[in-house]
Length: 138
Image (cartoon, rainbow, N blue to C red; front, side, top):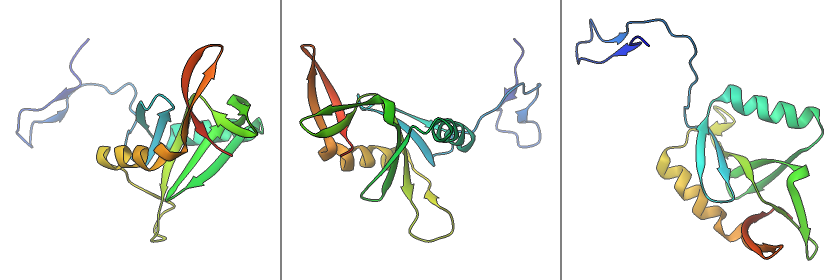
């Protein structure tokens, strides 16, 4: 495989030197968080693919927690003691307060802070003797 990018700290010669077959931005507006607390940043196009697919299948759930909107697959919910819990992963965005755009860019620190803000919405469920962290969605 040939080199595509070269960084030699020379602005006239650095950058793309090969053919880019495929590229995707992981700019921090859109995040997938698992109920195991792992996460990955995704592009707007990937975010829209997920939400469009769930909406098309009529399985798109959404809740607002503090300054965040969480989107999830409603078929992944489990009802325990009258509450719905999600085990798996969900999309997270921070709602913009300025009106310039719908969502705010998130740094790694912001993502970790969002996880802390959501901590109170997590519970441990015991399913068939195994323990799982789950997000309470109501």
